[in-house]
Length: 139
Image: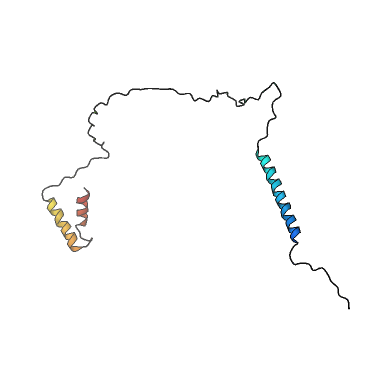
């Protein structure tokens, strides 16, 4: 009787191979971080040749004097003493529109109240005197 003994493979990945993949991923991430840091820095100017020096120069259209000290100036002023305020003039609004008058003769007010009482007691708008009442009110 012969027995074949084979190498059994596990269902998961090899632990050594998994560790190598993780190290490779870390190395790639570190290299990418290094490249991004280099790109973020402004380019450096090489050191000056012996006997010369670097100097900051303005390149704008208009030159302005640069200094560490801000210019300042003191200014003084004197106000007048408070004076008593004169009284405000009386406000009278300007007239607008047309003035109108109504003349009420003796006995007309009593007649007006008589028609109003008829109107209120009857509660109708069909009374023959209704036009007279409105005419008297609108004058």
